[in-house]
Image (cartoon, rainbow, N blue to C red):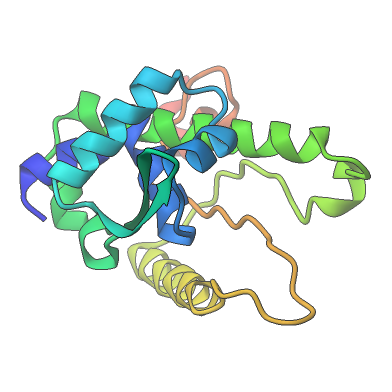
Length: 194
């Protein structure tokens, strides 16, 4: 993916559209129900830009009265963002993409909690923000294990009898401690303290 495509994809609305369309084929009306916090004009613009950029494609068209309804799906090899793609972004562009992912997570959680019978206390496997300390070799090992886990679950994107959809979000990156979170003083060598 060239830098222009990385910038196209790492936009707060477009990244959410591409993530939804990576999971299933949808028309814009269906997308609007899933991304109900996105204004309709922004949604149509995002779909148009992703289509023009080659991130999504039209999978089929259906005639509905006098109009033609188009269905879209993300193009797998074009919607994936590699480490090199991220390296082509300015810091503000990368942060905008992260903000888009966070908004999508919040919207997913709100939709789940609003669903009849939702039991967020027992249904959540784990919600945690944990700072961990690794050597460079351990970090490489953790990254390999996370990638293997994600690859295993990427293979399970098709619905099978007896399965239920489960949202999996995994993030790992170096942490910069602040003096207020307690991790800063733990990370400093003892000799650094007066």
